[in-house]
Image (tube, rainbow, N blue to C red; front, side):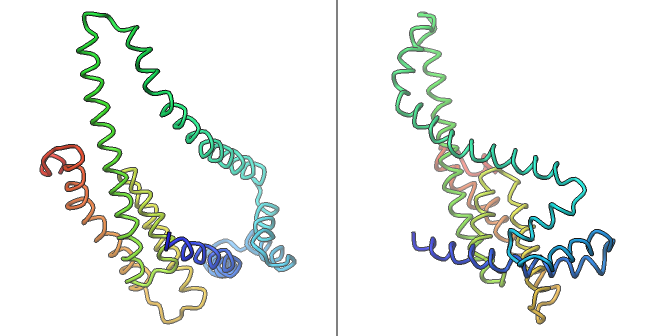
Length: 238
C-alpha cells in the first residue's frame, strides 16, 4: 500500500514526459534513420498541441499501415480487457462451486478405481497449487529486488520498471523484457537532458542490476522458495 502513491507518481511523470521523449527519439532517428517519414511525423507533431494523444494521432495518420496498427491495438486491448474481466469471474465461479463440482464428478468415476483416481488427482492439485503459490512469492520478492536494484543504479522510474520486471518473472525466462525496458528508459532519459550520463550508466549498470537480481533468483530465491512450497530438496529444484 505504501508504494502505490510512488507508482502513481512515476506513472504520471512518465506520461507527462512522453512528448519530450517522443521528440528526443525523433531527433535521434533523424540523424540515424531514413528522414522521409520522420520529417512527416515532425511536421504533424509541430502542428499539434503536443499532448500524448496528439502525438499518437500524428503517428497513426502518417503511418502507411495505420489501419493495421489500429486493428492490432484494438484487438490486443479487447483481449486484455476481456481477460482482466473474465479471469476473476471464472476464478470466483470455480472457487465458489469447487467442492460441489468435485462431488458431482465423483459420480462419473468407476467405482473400483475411484480411490486411486482421487488420490492421484489430489496429489496433482497439491503439487500445482504449491508451485503457483511459490511463483507468486518469488514474483513479489523479485518486484522488490528489481525496484531496489534499479533505484541503486539510477534507472528512471525504478519502482515502476522494477515492478514490471518482477511481475514478468512469474513466467520463467520472460523477465528480459523488463530488463530491456529499463535500458531503453535509461537511454531515452539520457538523450532527453541527462548530459552527464555515459554509456556505462545507460548499458552497464542497468544490465548489471538485472543480471545480479536474476542470479539471485535462479540460484537462491527460486530453489529456496520452491523447495519449501513443494517439499523438495533445493538441489532438485536447481
